Image (tube, rainbow, N blue to C red; front, side, top):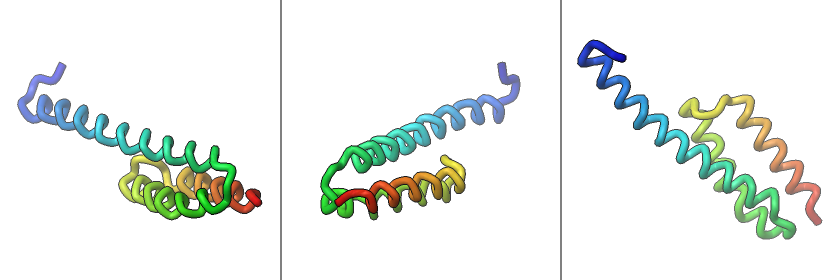
Length: 84
């Protein structure tokens, strides 16, 4: 266990930050699931800009890797183009 006051604070702040990041990562995954499960192109086109913004924000804050963000966006765009 941590022996210094600053190390104890770091443990607390890391736990708080981990919970915060987990919440936003899970929110993005749920939005991604919703877009991928959409059968209608119009509905998906309405949801995609918000999803892309969410993915970009997570990549900018290093919650997900930038390449993972690009791969997710590419997959969503491919799904959107396959809808009729």
